[in-house]
Figure (spheres, rainbow, N blue to C red):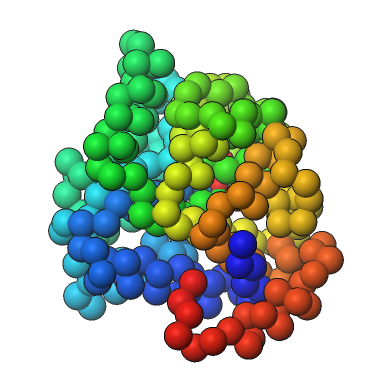
Length: 259
Ligand code: GLP
């Protein structure tokens, strides 16, 4: 796991966008794993800017990490719609190449299986962007999630519903159920880049990077990932025991090594 600590959001976004750009130049039909939430937003802004400057997404494919159950298509907080607004609608990725779990399906387990099948048929995710919940979740894999889980329905913690209420008209409007890629699914992405900022994430970041691997902090499963990058601002990194070591490693990193 590589931990990069930088003062603010924009330089972190540039690093993540560099990784996406390098991937697309090497593999134009790459599979991108997309997370909703505020953390990846500066990355999407940077990629939209690079698209205007010529970066081509026409052959890229995208798989959305998670989705609320029961929000009507086009609902402003349905993740497919959030990601269309924040990213996919701002670059030239074909709408038919954007896949997400179907939170409106009559048969939700079948929709989860269909999503996993589509992901497998696409060859798996090349680069997965992730945020981090204050309770240590990634995707919507809440504490207690099986570390081997696949895409399935989950019930949200009240803490997560409260965290996300700011995007809705109030807590009552936040769904209780979601579909999410499992931790086992996320672990199969070839490269994972997690972004976290702000003091509210500091404890979850500590548990993720330096705690034991345990379902109480689902993100800690990334300690088993062979290529995981954790991009943090100073506040999110403020509880890390080895922060100075991570800074030292990054500052002295061989030039030829990307993320
Ligand atoms: C939601 C999403 C996650 C996201 C998390 C953190 O619960 N399902 O994918 O990482 O929120 O969101 P934010 O980046 O807005 O703090």
